Length: 336
Image (tube, rainbow, N blue to C red; front, side, top):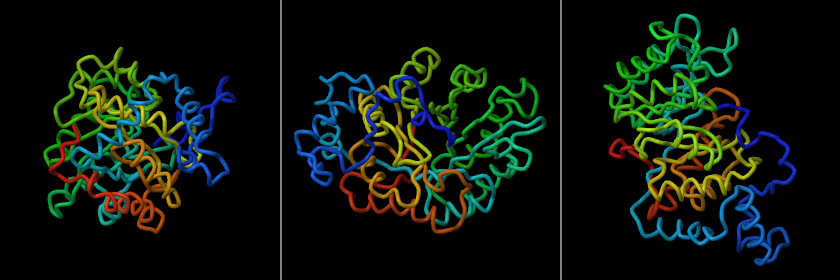
């Protein structure tokens, strides 16, 4: 994901926000920091009010847990972060990821798996990486539910060139989708781009769109720019490269989950869970009701080391400990 997150953006109202992203501050658990349960509910009200969420919906927030406990298991997606090379694909799948996040940058003659867009920052070409991912799915029967394409510059090239958004879409349809791998097109702060319009207008049942930001903003963008997209294919994400330090992550994601449960969104994801984010991961999966997390390193490419393994283990351990309400998503779960 983009390292300069929407949750970290400073502005004139930043000083007025309540920075309480910690599980320890939820109601009933405030004594860890010397706060009474009464003040816990005051804090909860303050947090919700900072995202302009009406107080009369607090009760509906609390219904999320009840609804989840009485419904079928929620499929959870562990999405490997910044997969830019073949060896990263191999590592992520061997660890147990069931989805991959790939940063894509258009250069003059092609699309590359590239987060930074610098001279030597690119990994594989999109074609080579897609072929390798599809080959893994075909030959090893890995559980790759979808590939999240985080598109950095969707309007860099005009139609007809191999670096255009149309060429990227055609590439995904040529290689990934025939292998049974769905595609999630990510437009970070580019919902008004030509690229978004192209994907929106030609969306098929294997594809979905994800927008990043606060829930109310995302819903507004989908309302004005996403006409014709089925709700199940409208995805939102909200997070921070440093998950534990993110501002207002919990209330935004919980609001998004509430909207999802009322048919306004398809999926709600957060990012980036890294080694040591255990408590926050548990909190977001349990209390915020999200559908999964991008995990791995905060700002580095995925690899076969202890950091990504530990981050994935946090997700899997929670799911296994709550098997009555959660399970890891499989190929039988259609994400949209």
